Image 1 (cartoon, helix red, strand yellow):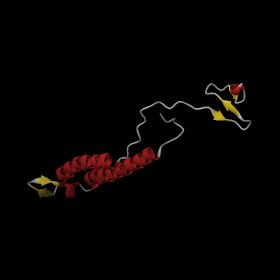
Image 2 (cartoon, helix red, strand yellow):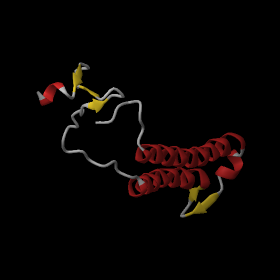
Image 3 (cartoon, helix red, strand yellow):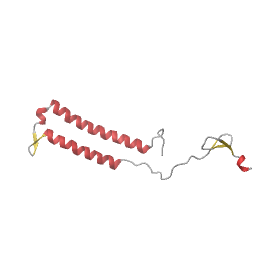
Image 4 (tube, helix red, strand yellow):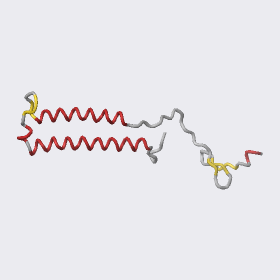
Length: 113
């Protein structure tokens, strides 16, 4: 399991992708809200099947949310799965000694005797 200090490239890509898609949806929604607030006459125009622009735009927003979620799901990168738990290995110090996982210093020559 990765620590919170390191963020994988996959997670960075997924975050950036998600935020970009969120901005796209936010702009579409902002257009809907501003259109209803400032151009109410325009939103009352019948555009198809007797439905006004506000209704059609609202349903289009719902469909876009679904489409954007599919795009995210298809483009999202998965992080490599680690089946085994990584155990820390002893690290060599500059003096030729080994550090144990518990932090104790082990002399490499002591093990040879």
